[in-house]
Amino acid sequence: MDVTIFSDVEQLSRAAADYIVRVAREAIAARGLFTLALSGGSTPKKLYSLLATESYRSQIDWSKVEIFWSDERCVPPDDPESNYRMANEVMLSKLPIPAEHIHSMPADQADRDAASVAYTQEMKRTFGTDDVPQFDLIQLGMGPEGHTASLFPHQPSLREQQRLVMPVSVPKPPPDRLTFTPRLINAASHILFLATGAEKDEAVGAVLEGPYQSDEYPAQIVHPTHGEVTWMLDTAAAGKLRKQK
Image: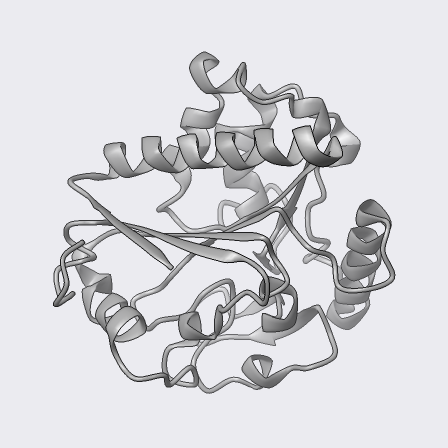
C-alpha cells in the first residue's frame, strides 16, 4: 500500500491525474483498453475537471477507455445527487469518449435487483468475461464514518460473496443506491483512494493504522487479490496518522 500526503486538494488532484494517465497508458499499451470505475462525492471533482483540460486530455487515447461507476444514488441521471451527472458535467462531456463506452448505472430503475444484474452483465460483456471483471483502476473515496463506494458500516453488503453489484439502503441521503461489492472491488489491478478534509481524519487513522475491523470501517475491506492500493490524502485528512509519510 502506498500512502502520500499533499498540502492541498490542488496538489493531490494533479498527482491523481498523473497516476490515472500512467495506469491508462500502461493498460492501453498492454491490451488496447483501459477500464476505469469512478466514484462520486465532492473529493474527485477537481481531479475529473483536470482530466478534461488539454494538458491531460491529450495524454490518453480516450477512444480506448471504458468508464463505469463504483456506486450510484437511485436518482435520475440529471439529478444533482447523481454521481454520473457530476462526472459528465465536469469531465466526460468534454472528452472524446465514444458514448457507448460510458456505462452509467441504471440506478433510477424501479427494480433495483434487476438493475444490479443488468449492470453486472454489461460489465461482463464489456470485459469479455464470464468471471469477475478485473478493472484496471477503481477510484474510490471514503466517508467520515469509513464507508467506501456505498459499502457502509454493519451492512450485509460487506459480507456479500456472490453478487458483484447490489442494491443497498444506507444511513445517508439519498439512502437507496447501487454499489460494487467487495468481491468486484478486490479483483481490480489498481485502486486509488482519495480522501480530503479534517472530518475524515479519525477514519483515515483507523483504516490505515488501526486494527482490522472492516465492519466498523468498510474501507479496510479493500485488499485487492492481485492489485495495488494507493492512498492520496491532504494534510487535514492525514491529521491523525502517527506515521506522517
